[in-house]
Image (tube, rainbow over all chains, first blue to last red; front, side, top):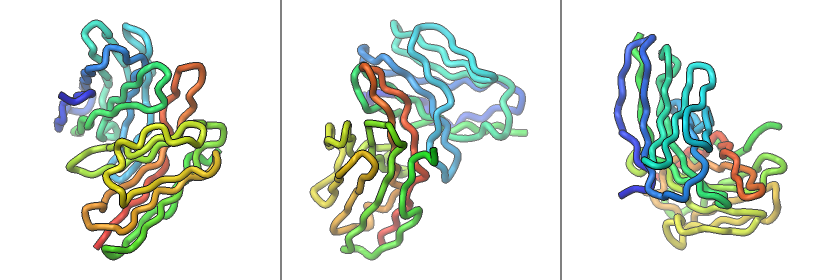
Length: 111
Length: 116
């Protein structure tokens, strides 16, 4: 079992719909959770981070964390074609410099 | 700040040659990471430094790979000798580990390595 698992996709949604990206992790000691977006041919860039159980909203993006279920998700509301990218989930333990990344979910938003 | 700076952006080399990738982390960051990304294997952590000291090199594939961080503002990843299976995009990233809480990683633009 991988430490961080994501549905590989591809996930396809129509423009304006809600895209839901999911991530599960195996290390119960994980404390910090990050979502990165990576456009084709580009480097990953952070779009959301969350430390506490519950929801965290930033514009059209909402990160949801459930530590009991070891589950973190990213919702993208009003999806736009420009949201088409690969989304990487990353998890970090306390006092750990490094993050563990999932393999990513490729999202395509169709006009 | 210019962000994490990597060079070169692209490298094409012949099998058996030595390849050196360079990275300048964000000023003030104390953690530096070298990743390799391929379609087949995704994003793999090769080595991680904290305060210029290698902390975890378990991801380094074999002895042909070596990494150094002589000071807080510079790191190199060397492959000698290079092989076609080393072809990938190599990312350098940096972050700040402070009071037990690590910030997110900021990635450089990557070096696309092709070994022919």
